[in-house]
Image 1 (cartoon, rainbow, N blue to C red):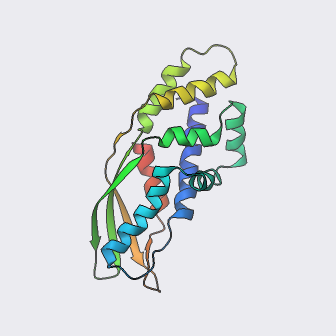
Image 2 (tube, rainbow, N blue to C red):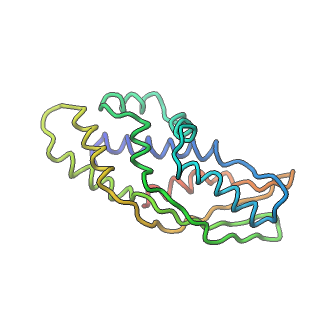
Image 3 (cartoon, helix red, strand yellow):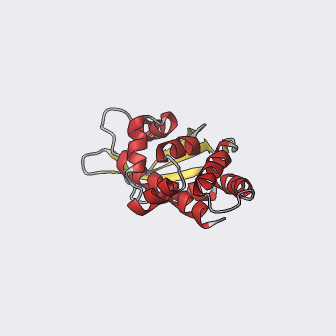
Length: 185
């Protein structure tokens, strides 16, 4: 993978980390524990699925100025890039296990574009670029993302705990868990 591909993929992961750190917040009382957890995860994953303006703004807020400059240098609109990356995203919460010690695990199976397939498509798209036309690199990257179809990923296990107010929250490692799953896909 070339330098631009690595940087742009890292920027996507950074954006997802920022999004999950901001978006994944506690859920109030009222429903049973399993339903609270399902509601919490669904609320947050539905934002990725719908890719509304607020979700994209949260994702892009975590991208460094340096990474944003690279997007601009190759003629990529960061919002369009994120939309293309998550086009076809879906999920299913397949299991929630609540433990007696106010901890829980949830298993989520995502359907999304594989980063390995995106990398391969980028490399294929960029193989035909000659010269130093940076906007051609950006277009090749968008073409590569667009050429990949979503597929079911391996299950992701999310650890949760109840806070002092009795609300379920994802453990601090949720961002790295999600990022690891993105990179492994």
